[in-house]
Image (tube, rainbow, N blue to C red; front, side, top):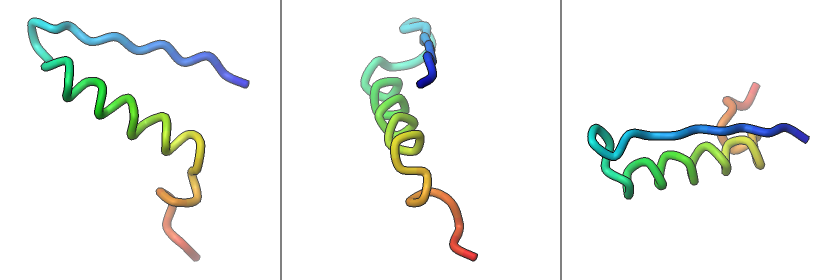
Length: 39
């Protein structure tokens, strides 16, 4: 188990784009085999 905290400044980054990035990051952490190259 790991705690990961990220924040974004809404003056610089659109909230929808930040949410999409965080969803992609969460998916990569949950299922890294989908993101890593196959040998």
